[in-house]
Length: 235
Image (cartoon, rainbow, N blue to C red; front, side, top):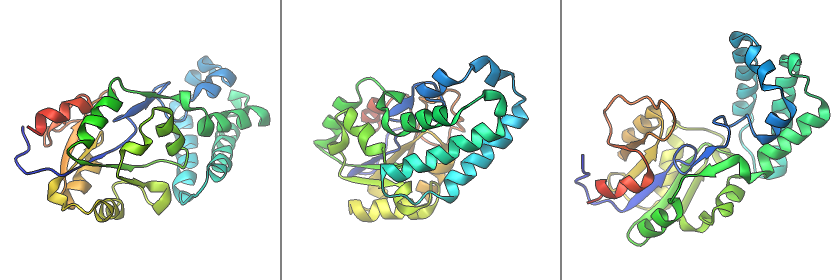
């Protein structure tokens, strides 16, 4: 499927679109692997793990309006403390929790950029405005700088700035307002269809990217396997 409209702006999700977590899970970073026996983690009942992580994730969602990496560090300290208290079998000490939270915020090696991302963005920028719409934390700027792409985007809208996450309509409306391009002249690339549904409701052109393992795909949106495939849709 080739987009027939004249596109002027391209918005990107970040996670599973531009980069991925090193251990295939955003919260199981390098420090977790150093402090946790993965066999113990895997042996715990799934319903127990789900309950603990759901409670901890709700804490993140309920306290998502942040400004600084220091606030992010404090938040993830509380998050991993909840994990440690809910799953005492992991044997996480206070020192280990501090290491894990620090790694989550400041260790950019926890994030692996897909091959060729920077050249693709540089080429797109010659003809299109580029934007970010991402559920993330203040450390995202550090992550993007580590790959040399932080300055390639004209607009960046992050959930932590607004205190709401996708698919909340405020995120898309804010992004469109800041870019100054009509919604129907924009593309939004994301790995989760409900986020694309919300973009479509705002008049944007959704594109599903399938880099995440087993990405659900109903077939209702154009699909790409890498952001470089977007050129085929822009012909």
